[in-house]
Image 1 (cartoon, rainbow, N blue to C red):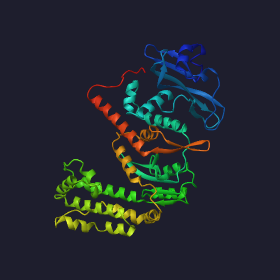
Image 2: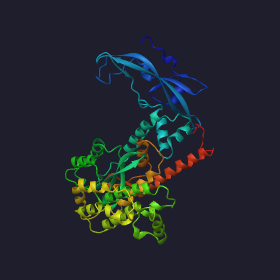
Image 3: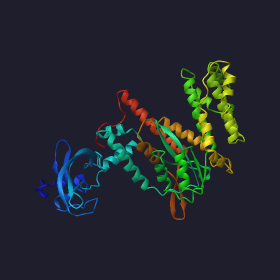
Image 4: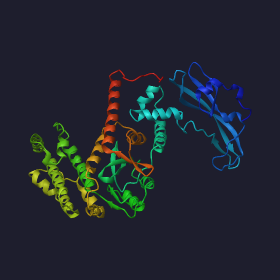
Length: 464
């Protein structure tokens, strides 16, 4: 690389002290545009790093690449400024392992991220409660889509490392939520008949399930309630060979409700009756008289929806009493009878949406029977909990998985449990989790409405 471009006498001590990143030395202050040019302190030592691949010490500097970052530094009056940081990063060649080229290692910023770690942590904490774009706007930095995932993962890993270890539940439930066309498994603890949120996984792959299961004590987990998914079933059997793995009544109710929603969306497109769907999915015995009258008026012109509604209500009633796989399969096979009763000889498409229930009962018969063999329902509030989480996430504005996971895990405190002199976390109570999600959703919605109306309730300056 030839002679060094910068000498130690170029270092600006006051600016270096203000920057307060021990790795870096400021060599140029580009006033008045609030920009520091920096090099690694190793630049002046003559020490060359070892090769990260082979561990060899026969390395030589090859080139310098300028890396542009945003940083936040303090002022004497304890406020702060966002500045540009131009890092003259050196790249080295390893002569031991085939001329491999690698950059000098740094700890003040993650690879590929356009912010220093201390600024990215501030942006990540802000994104827990409002939109990433809004937080970046507050600090006067570009909302880099390439960086948001990295900064949220970094913050999540750090904050989770500060929490007590998870106490392995005796019973867990895993159900899949849909969020903007993507599906994410949600892990719930069912200990002591109380439902608590533990985690949400990045996908329903065997690798994602195995990574989560590996953090649990395989001998402590006695029951696992699953959604009908072969990857999940196989991963659960592998991780917990001695556990009861079951498909619950709640799961069958939820999939039946989703099937009925498909019928509703197809048949009631132009229906203007407010809150009709929420009335239809509730057990009919809980409806008020005025709700019954509204439903009856809607059903007169929609025989397919009427047949599906009665079938759905019949299944809810069956699940409230004694039921088994054969009884539910008989119900699933009777869809043509429901149509015949309400179609009144009019041509109506068959109700195929409920075929999913037949598939679950057939392919996961053993797991359904495992549930029926349990002495008691592991958590009576499970159905209400899954429905509340689904509804809360349905109202959350779009965000990538890393933001979604951080908002669910970091905004609400865990319940804690002490064994001897050690503290464990049990998970997040569902009511508190859902309440916080709604608070975040409302905060983002209000701020977006304020922006559209031409004003902003937040401080727009980059100084804080």
